[in-house]
Image (cartoon, rainbow, N blue to C red; front, side, top):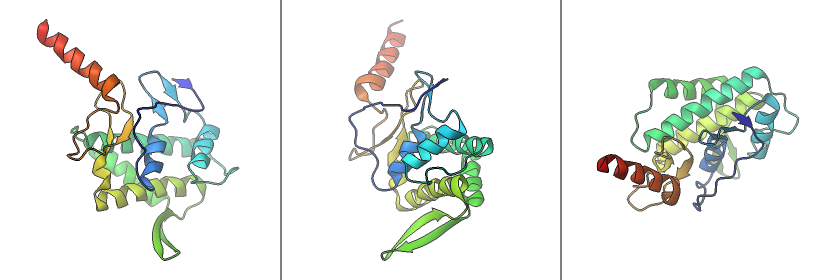
Length: 189
């Protein structure tokens, strides 16, 4: 994978609402189709987490933190793909559970509202916060709308705002067209 500082993939879709946007942003740090990876080093992980507002600039980040982040990202991407009809392995759920436990997931009250947060230092707390956002979204039903593109090449996460929750691809003009064209050609062969 090519190490990059940013991946821009404009599907024309609005990002996920509220804090679920953080999970979407975290998971969209890899582009398998073009071989691009934002989480290529501990320093790169720090930059991503700072950009998401989950850690302070200058927070220590280790190789073990990077491995934990990659595991959580893969798990969340698998769980988002499950929202698009592909069963998630139990290992994905276990990875989210480990991230929540390692970060000592907690609840903080601020200005009369509750917010899930990791109470462990730096990266473990940030990853627990992402796990907590997943859990809260699963509980309120909004997680079912965060999907991973069904295209085998893509996997980009997007928030399905369609009335009947039927969106399958991040971008119908690109991924949807490729998939439908491939199926058409297979039928004609």
